[in-house]
Image 1 (cartoon, rainbow, N blue to C red):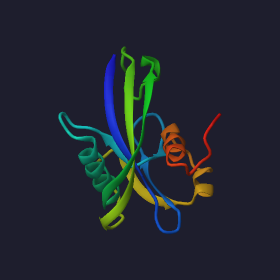
Image 2: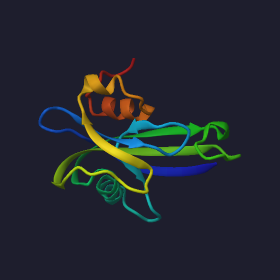
Image 3: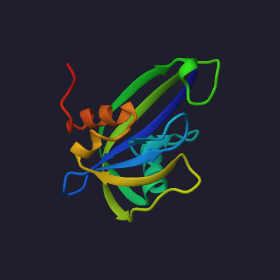
Image 4: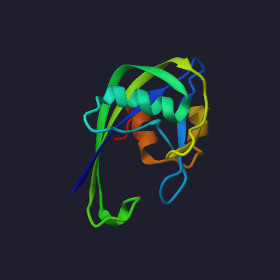
Length: 144
């Protein structure tokens, strides 16, 4: 089984909007939380700061560890063809912007970023991680 560890951030602005990135790698285009995979030996907080800068143009500071989400993706459902399942560990932080300006990533796994109200997010094509992270941040009601 392959293992992928990634770090993501829930970033909101003064109007309560949430920062998302549009993921373009794989079978479909969908909005996701900004963040991504750790490089070998990289600290998760360093990784989330690096990924946010790459995907959105913003510098951030993590303010809280919201949680860790674990999922095993069967080989047949992986984005890139494989005969091996993938175990993903997603470390989710709350973060605040400390600098930079919104810009889009070029030649990466995302092609744009933007701010969205919660009611707008409900209508977006998005990966499950968005709802998971928003529940961790208590921006969406918990599932029972």
